[in-house]
Image (cartoon, rainbow, N blue to C red):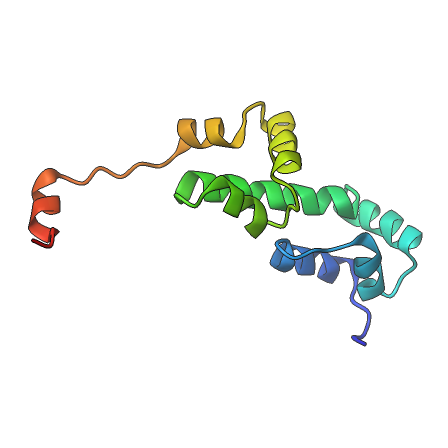
Length: 124
């Protein structure tokens, strides 16, 4: 068993491992606290519950992947730690006001590549 971590270190742990299945109980154990004491201490330190903090980190990473990659939305959902595409899409829409696909379509960072470069590097 690992030695207990402080609340700030648990928050750092969440930031690094948001894509894995994390439970409040497991995080409380990392902190060496009871679940209810951990939730209260985390809220006092971070300004939100551990569950909300984790959910926010996952949504932030999903937004980043949606705008900077062409990874399918189902894979993004899985990568950031959501278990269900339906719950991910519903939460995403209730948080941003847009579905993940609409969010991507409006914000995708597109790169213009001149045709001459495409011809130059095309394998014929």
